[in-house]
Length: 579
Image 1: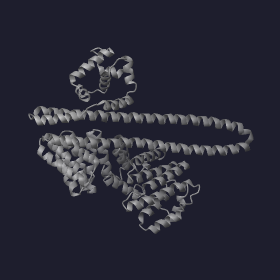
Image 2: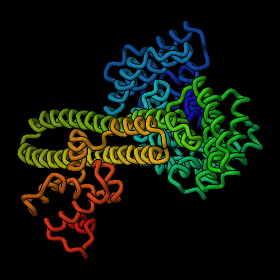
Image 3: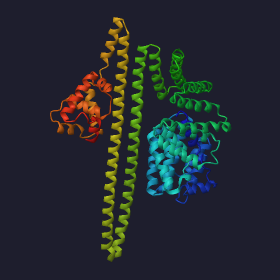
Image 4: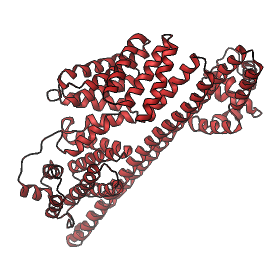
């Protein structure tokens, strides 16, 4: 979403954006900052408000000296809050200069703060530091850290204090949308709307949250729910007077109507978004809505107007680049140039679309893996801290056992039992983590397989179009050019097959081994046919992927039936699914 960063910047600049800190004097705030009694962390909020309210460097330095941040000693409350205070000082310096120069130092300070907070075992403090960690990471574009610590904070708040205590749901919903966790996005968005029925009504943040929830339903293909929340978001504009958002939400609704094939209504709403976005110089949003309008015009038979609009969208996106919108424009260009008979241009933009699509999907997959890795590292760090705490307690107990004498043997026995339980528990946790890693790898492999197969199918579709073009062309030179293009598009080479086979075996382990057990003399072509059949591909798709004719596919399938002893009455897909 293009509107995420301003929301986060506003909330980071004002630590009490979702709840006013209790009044306390300056002296009370500094004293409470260092202790465990300030359960709600109100002293931190008061002091952070003071930090945000001044542009005087000397005043900020004086505040830091009064807090005595370098003399924390063994006070983990002061260490945790002090590290957060230093991180916010660096962030504020970067924010005022519109830079991100201090990202590594800020992350280091936040890690130190999390470590100290975990040492306290105070889950309210841990949740508060985690929430702040997530907020700051938005500014520094560290999505994985922002997501992980945002989720961690919400879990702690809900576990200990209930849904109403967590102030961060609407921002967390935006984060989950950006990493394509649409169900989680809806869950967080509805939690925020549900816990703020009085204060949220008509507010700008309500409009943004309603739009985010609608977008998530939209991406899930639940169009009725999407339109319900889009309409509710539009209704809040009467209070907010945000004409720019009328355009944004109208454009989103236009995309739904396009999906429903109501192209005339879609075009009207999308062109409305385009005009309003141009008024506000939202060139990226204008470009995206214009290419959607071009698709609607193409669907209605207005190929010339569609071509003009898609070309204009390419000009607009250069003024405010966005990778996802650029991908949409390339996709629209392929179809519109094809409809206008410009096949060379269609082929050119098909290549650009494939490259852009793969880059975006790769980044999303890497982000998902990175989120899991960050979560695992945090759990490992928490485990190590608690293990050290247990060791400290064990040392104290051993000193006391010397004094107690007669209870020494009993205490040692209890300690041994407890340590065995801990080892068992830790072993179970390690196994659970290993299982999660395996599941993540399996999920990633499935996604890669889907992308791999889809890319090949798209290439096959393009070859079919080129073949059709060749049939319609009476020019020998044009036919020769088309044949040259076809020959350059090698589909499923030996290298492709090895890559395909590696991904396939991650998803369906032992598949090929079982095949060879059932038919030791099975050929490579028959193995390929078995794998493609397991993926539920059509005969034409199998033929295109292997560079053979549909008739050859039928023959190979028949030989495979004979090899495995499958009767003609048995469905081969069901056979492989069962085996």
